[in-house]
Each structure stands twice: as structure tokens, then as C-alpha cells.
Image (cartoon, rainbow, N blue to C red; front, side, top):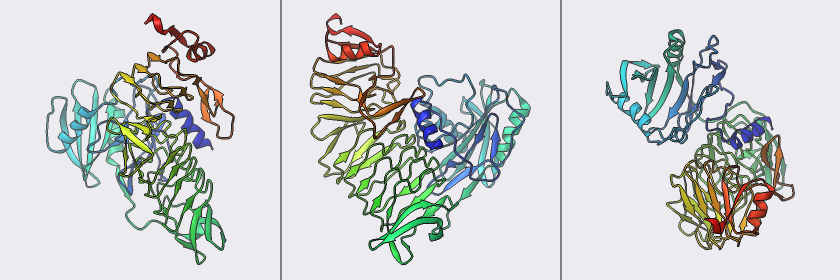
Length: 482
């Protein structure tokens, strides 16, 4: 529960950096006021930095350690990890767009000595991997780039404190990839289970392996189900579920904050409620054809999920999905799906009849969005993390705005709401210590439609929107005054 609540708190405070997880090595690296953690390096590997740095605790001395996907456009989709973000360092608009930064790494690793932004200081190898140390010209920083079959790893650190800079260079020199290319652990003794005439149901995981293949058979019977919360907050990074499994219970992998890869069984029919909630490092998932429904909260706080393919069989996506999926750039839809449709190259997901706007993907560049005509319901938490979006205009087909629909639109300046809207802000959530948390069993309650207190609600006098604005002390402006 602790990890799950921490991840929810982190997500809803809109922190962009990745959240800490436990290191997989007994030699955990200690970075000033923080830690360096394993970072995904493909389907079955990660890297560790096993050198301590305990002597430096000044806010001015901080490194950034991460992995950059060779073709990624920004740090978030590159699965970068900030080992330490000093107090007072803020992310400005545009900082996440670092295509030029990625190009630097590609250039220097391919042989360029001076890019005009950086100059190579030395070329060497780190545990048989090509490495390049460069000076960022005029910036007071150095970077060490390490390449491996198209992936790039980087260390970035200030040079004003030479002792600190030298210590970081020594840390970089200890980088090694922890390969897991041998068969994953498949040990029946690692599981708590029950059985009946239909087969075995796994109720819990007691093993210590992080890369696991769940057995297809235990005690001579097929494994047919994973129970509710069976892997709740388990420290697993790679999991393969056998095709004998046809049911995965509620919140089964909830809080698995280290989980990077999950292979689901071909016969699965449902992504159950909260099944992948707070799987913060899961950045790709193949939903099997045959899945008909996605339960509520299933993808809550999947920070690194960048794209999601919806199978033709899918007919229902419950509420409160894709909340704090801050890297979800687009959906794709299998041919033959009749329940949903996509707009804007997969960046907007609607029901097939166009009556419900399910999700508006994160980090779109446009400053104004006009909700398509025919939309009647804006789903709860429908709008992903947005910084550019300033104005939202609702057409007069809209009747309902569910709770926190615009919670993540941090730059919102105005939202134009027609008189047709009669219901605003209802959601099953609980406010705990100032943080919104899902409350699946709770009653519907009113919560504000936007966290942006400076956003102006433009609506007709006497409308439900005006009542809502007055109740939550939001800025209201009569529509005719515009």
C-alpha cells in the first residue's frame, strides 16, 4: 500500500521525474540526497551503478542518470530517470522536448568531435561499451554518453566542484549491464495457490526472483487464474503469464513499480479493475485479441506507457483509466473494432457513436481544442497532462462533464461551457491529505472540473457551470460578455 499511495501522490502532484524504486543489487548506488536505480535497457536487461557517493549533499551538485531510447523525442518517452532533482530546480515549458539533446548523443557516439554544443574530451570504453565524455560548451556541465546496440545511457553533471565531477566520472566507469537473457525463474514453490476441479489459482508470490515465468502447471493441474492482488507490490521486473490462465483478478499487479515487461495470456478476456494500477515503469503492453473489457483504474499511474493498441474485441473501457498516463501519446485501434474510434492520428479516443470523449492524450501541442460536435459526455480525468492547451470549447451537444476531467490541463486559461451542460464534477474519489485518490466503493461526489484555479469558466448566466464555479470559487464569466 505504501508504494501505491506514494505513486498516486506523485502522479497527482504532476511530478514529471520518475519515482524511486528499490535497487536490484546489494550494492545500491548512493547519489547526493537520492539514489541511482535500475533503468530499463530493453526487454530483459537493466543497468546498475554500484558505487557510493556519500560525501556530497549540496543542492548545487547533482547528476542526472538515465537511459535514452535511440529514436525517442523526449526524456519522458525515453524512460529517463532523474537520480536527483535538486530543490528549486523547475521544469520550464519546452524542457521535455529534447530532440536536440538526443541528437547530441547520437552524433558524439557516431564519431563527431565538435557539434557546436558539445566537444569531445575523451573516448574510451566502460565494461566493453563505447563511451564518450564531452564538455557542454559554455554550460558548466559535462556529459558521459555510453552506447549499446542503439540504446544510449547518459550521465550529466556540473563541473564547478571538481571533486564531485571526478566522483561522478568514477561512478560512470562502474556502469554495467545486468543481463537476464537466461530463462526466467519458473518455480512452483514461489507461489501461494489453491486448486479445485478446474485447476490452480495463484493467490500470492513469495519468491525473490525479479524475472519470472508463472508456471503453466502446479501439482499436476493447469494454472487457470491469478487471484485478486496476487502480485500486489511485488518487486518483479519481467513477468510472463502462461496461456493456461484465463482470468487475472482485480489489482493483481497493482503497485508493481518495477515492472517493465508483462506478457499476457492469449485467452484473457478482461483487463480487470486496477490490474496494472501504479505500474509506473511499464512502457509497453500488448492487449491480447479477445479481451472485451478494461476495468476501472486499470491503467492508473502508468507513467511511461507511450502507446496502447486496442484489440478488435474490446467493447468496454470503464472509467478512471489512463489517469496520470503522462507519456501516453496515442492509441491504435485494430481493424474491426466497432466500439471505439480515434481522431487526430490516435491522440483522441471516443466511443464509436461519438457521444463520449474517453481520453485526450498527453502533451499535445495545440493551444485550443474544440470538442467534436456530438460528444455528450467528457469522461472523468479525460484530458491527459497538458501544458500547451489554453482554451477548451465545448459544443452544445455536451451535457455532462465528469469529475476532474481537466485536472491535468495545467495551462488552462478558459473553458467555454454551453448551457446544455447540466452535470459537472461527479466522480467516485476521496480527498485524502489534499490528494485525490480513487474510491471505487464510494459514493459519487462533486469535485472541481479543473485544478487550475485561474482558469475562467465562460458559460451562460444561471447555468449549471455558473453554480459549479461559485461552489468551488472558480472564476466565472458570463458567455455574452465575450
